[in-house]
Image (cartoon, rainbow, N blue to C red; front, side, top):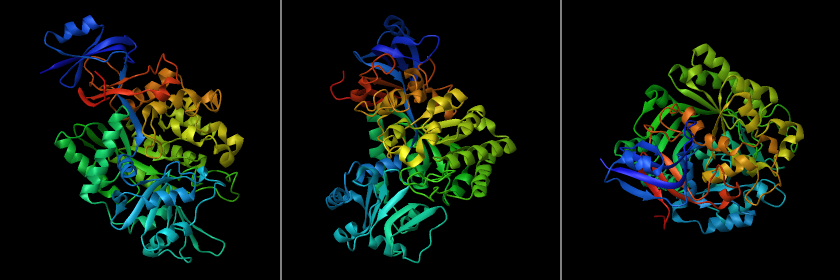
Length: 532
């Protein structure tokens, strides 16, 4: 079997006994040696293939601990509405949408955000109807917790002025009582249910595009937060055929009827694909005012967000999956949702005896100070996304007020309280670029360096803590700390070469840094053009 030696200016191992090296050797998907050039070459023996990465910095494989692979593939292949500055620009992009944007005869798009528009108000269906009077249009908001649809989509779904809000959802209506075309959280499902499913070819194209993109940005693994059954079955096929380029830790989709299939199947382990966790959603998102709060939104009196299922149903589902051996991961954005989720996880895990399953709070975004301490004391996983902070910081205080911000995006407080931090991006809600996540974690600034000193800088992470959040943290959160997360002989050969040093270099350099190479199980799944 061939041995490959990689040389670099520095290799950060995250191994306390030997944190810095200059080379590593790979054989049969494992790390054979890590150390000086001479040490590694001696261990590799004569005839080893040698790759000189030049001035690059090598770090352990970077893992996104909360993301959506199928969602990324869909966003890469349908109408892209991110950063559109107005409704008119959205309509213009839709009019030029590629053929891949259609699912059946439905036009799909993703990424609109009314916070980017003058006035910040939700859109209406009139502009869509004017351009698409007979084509149904379904446009997912940037946070995936609201949809903007046209009149034809409403007609096909049977939504009228007399349609009541579904449990855990809102059908926005105008002053005359007519649906505006904006659907929040569970109301989206009423329309989504009548959209034809993607074809096999569409699904293959989407998943392939998403995995390729992940490798390009330096990800060696992804924790998929709620995988639909068709996508999981296809990835199982690819894994069995040796065609899956990255490691995927899949959470079963626990909201819909597919959960019954996953519950019957039980935890599953392949070579590069695993499913031993389940994802539920307690509430919506802050940007669409669906995050469940204890008190009213500061910018919408009388509105406290949405719980997406009754608390007793959430707990019953959590108990059922815990009893089957699944790690339970629950989306919680608002402080009311986080109180509920901490209550459920602590009570259900104690009564089922499953505390060792490392249950997770996904997002843990806005918490009371008391709940931060409860989450940490229980040693739960706080799966947080640094770029959510830097995306939301310009308007979060308008939603929450200054007092609630004390427990919002509070990574330092969570870590200090004892929570296990696992960092991610929540792509495609945010960009999958993991370097942007590292930068946001240590600076709490946008790419332009705003605000000076960082937003609520007391919650910043140090550079080593941020790197551990994308390496050691996800490994622990997926029960793989004995195999991955550090660069130590005998562990899996997952690593990334970067053009900037994320530990000792200036944080600002991460904004323009490049991924030089991505290596998974000893195989190069990405190499930058021009890299030696």
